[in-house]
Length: 111
Length: 234
Length: 193
Image (tube, rainbow over all chains, first blue to last red; front, side, top):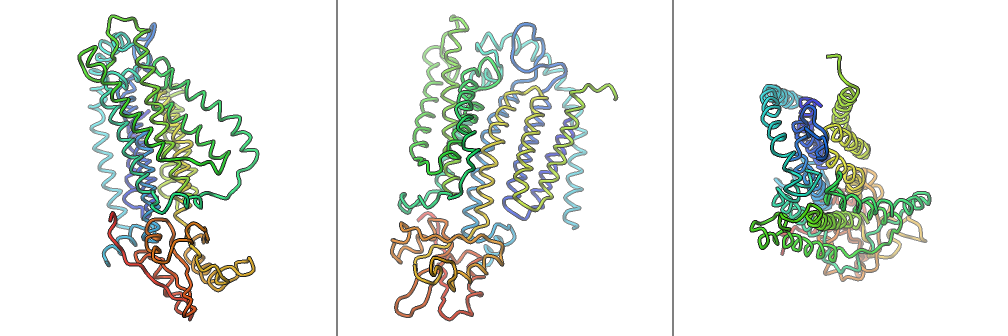
């Protein structure tokens, strides 16, 4: 429930993204960052004493429904974007014969 | 090694900045947002939209514009995947692209049992989106994973991806038109088209129909994605 | 500090578990293990969404993160380690007496073992029927990495592949020792024409 602990997850994702040598590893790190961002949004909207955002008799305080609505679409879109990245990754392997960033860059420069 | 150290130090600085900024943000949230929720959203949300689940109210009424075009992004991503993975060599040759591995019998039997239950649960989540947690996006994902089980039961299942994507495109246009009806009845775009003097029960018809349409669209999109991957995976 | 309720305590424990899982995903080297880790990661995040009073988001995360995301990762990782060979020669170069004992098979097996790849030989009749003139198109449009054909006049076996692939150059240097094998590399063409 602590936004700072959630932010640590995002930073770990950034660390992995900047040090990864493999394309698939980079996609994994993007997934981690995405989950961290979703968790951060929900953390901020979760106010003290709030219940789930379904109104009825005797409900006085709820969690903020707006970030939740945005995050649902983020999850669905995020999965398709991951799929797009992985499909590109398969094509890159069959074109270059490798999925290491360094090798691909070397081949592109040596052209 | 120095590169990793520099990255770690930079990320530490980011964390420190975040910790300092967080205190102000939390104070802001706990004062301004609280009064906004208590005075604005909780009493008026149900009356204005007819939906007890306020997340659905925001997705399908207040911010319908956003969710419509995020459904559009889904369509664009699916089209991109299909375009990247297309094979120009004649389509009948694509049959060498299926796995020859055998699924365990126990798994197949349990899949047959679970498949109708999953499908029913998916439809329940879609249709009850305005009363309980759920809605088109989530229910569509559940229906898509139910369809995925079919591919474990039957390996050689043939699927026409082009047909799926075409249906999805037409469904998207239908969703846009359905959401646009409100300009004739209420005078504004992208909101509930049933006039306000009707009771809440009548107003939920709009929510249920739109939830079903979005749910089918999302299910078709995810279905197209994993069929493309299964074909690619041979 | 100590008056935490049970649910808050659980939430803190789950968040620390989440950080540990994230570090494990970033540090781990084997991609196959990472798939299991990322699935458990998404399930733990789903628990945290419920604790943050967001059941709608949790349903979406469970539905997508437990079935569809692992599937696409499994497929793309297994595709990432495979070398597809289309056998158009159809004689004892690769298969002799229904067993993989031909000269070409031993060469290819040695090559793929050296670079930790998975050899995948197909002789799909639909693709073999296409004429030799369309070999380059076949290489570009499908995932086939290598095409094996036989030159009838000189009795040489010709291995064809894309020039852009780093594996082809390694294969060429490996095939120098064999007299009856020749490696041809197709030049790159622009995409989209």
